[in-house]
Every structure is written in structure tokens, then in C-alpha cells.
Length: 354
Image (cartoon, rainbow, N blue to C red; front, side, top):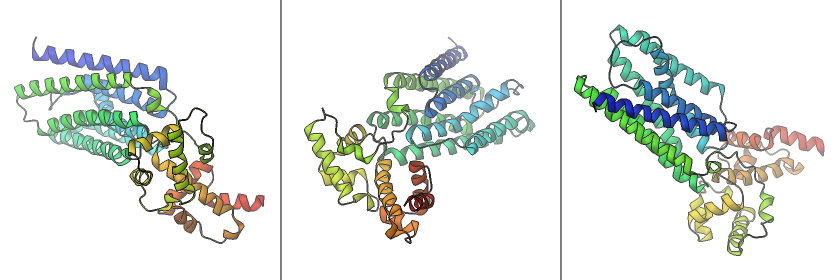
């Protein structure tokens, strides 16, 4: 079998697996943001598998250019997917779509006018440097939020999915930038590119099919602190003892007020491994993210202070910082996401009700 035929088979296999993955996600998770972004990412990657080529080849046709543009925009979808998958509070904004449209448009212009005008290598380098930027953003998001993730299966899968995708995206971009231009180099580079893509797509598809989708795509849970006082009848005594000890740390010592409190801090105080504390907070208390767990306690304290007539003249920022927030912006966003109103509006509502 020739190199070209082998490459074609690998591309076809990758496209087939991606379409299967998109269909599976559509059937089960089309109503979940992360699920919809997986579908978009799979379709965009399929466009990439069809169009990917190392170096500048023949002039690009008018029907081929849109596929290349969508393929380029897929890196923005990948970045948004990591945001939605690893941040249960993530909301898609209008400007996210604007970024995607800008990248797609830039890629289309590159294909149709910039590259054919004699600036092919510059156009390829620019697009792939842009790709590397979004890969770095996605990896930074994954690493930055990894420690706060309380869902053990999601913690393991995130490393595989993002590392594999980033590995391919980074390899493809670097191959494009470093391409020397000889025909033999192009043939082998394209074969390597198609082979790595097919292997990674197969691995991701296998992983997504094996892992319970609810661990990855479940809607955010809105737990209440009071739930900790109502343990399930079948809850193990040892776990319940630890949950009670944890809630004493939160309610009596108000440890959530401390600067830079981490899950390791709480685990050390409770003298248990971090993985066990993650499991307790996730499975017993219903939280999927450690920061949400902390902020829920901080917001409950802030709500009590804002509703207290004796603290009516205390500035909102003072209440926020006393509760453990480091600045007013994150407090306002977290408070409104929880209560539906701003802290100032909440205080006025409570004053009116009194």
C-alpha cells in the first residue's frame, strides 16, 4: 500500500470515529452545553481530518476553503469545550462566538487571498501560531482548575482528553511551522499527522464510551449546606463522622475565611487523604467543584450579614472580605449566580421585607 493510500485510510477511520462520537453525544447530551461543544468539536475535527495537509500545496478551491476555515475554528471550540467540561458554572457568551467567527474568517481569508498572493508560509505560520495560543489557553484552564475538581472520573479523563488533543494540535502546528518543503518530507509528515490523529481519535472515542457520561456532562448541582445535616439512612458511620467533622470546621471555625484554603488544607486538618475528602464532598454533599463548596459557605455568611439590620452600614466589600472573598468582583458574580440578585439588591430586599 502506498503512503498516500495509507494516509487516506487513516483519515477515513478518523472521520468515521468522529461522526460516531458526534452521533452518540447528540443522542445523550445534546441539551448539555459541554455535550453540544463535544459535538461541535467532533464535527470540526472531522473537517480537519479531511483537509489537514502539511505545508502549502495546490491552490485551494472555493469549496475546500470553508472546510479549512471550520477546521481552524475548531481550536476555539476545543478551548470552549475545556471551559465547559471543567467549570460547571461556565456560560457561553456572545463574544465566544465572535472569537470563533474571527478565527474562521481569518483562516478563510488566508486560504483564498493571503496564501495565493505569495505569502503561503507566512499565512500557515500565523494560523498555526494562533492554534498554539488556544491550545495553551485550554491546557492552562485544565491545569488551573484540576485541583478543585471533586469528580474523580472527570479528573482522570480530563488529563487524557486534553493532553491527547493538545499533543496532536501542538504537533500539527509545529510540523506546519517547521515544514521544509521537500515532497518526501510532505508525504511522511502527512502520514504521521494522519496516523497520530486517528490514534488519538480512537483513544478519545474509547474513553468517552467507557466513562459514565453523567460524570462528565451532568448539570451543576445546587447543594444546600443544610443537606449535610440530613445524611442518608445508609450512609456509612465512618464517612458520616468525617462529614460532621468537616462541617464543624466550616460552621464553627469558619475555615473558609482563610486565605488560599485548599482541599489539602482541609484533608490535613481531618487527617485523611485528599482523594477521600474529594469523594466525601462530591458524593455525600453533592458538590462537583471545591471552590463552589467554599463559596457556598462564604455566601451563606454574607447573606446573613447583609440581612442583619445591625450591619446595614457595613460596606459590601467588607462583608465579602470578612467571608473569605479576596475582592469584590468574584464575590458579586458568585453571589448573583447563587441568589439571582446582586449583594446590594439582596440587602435592599431584606430591609424592605423587615
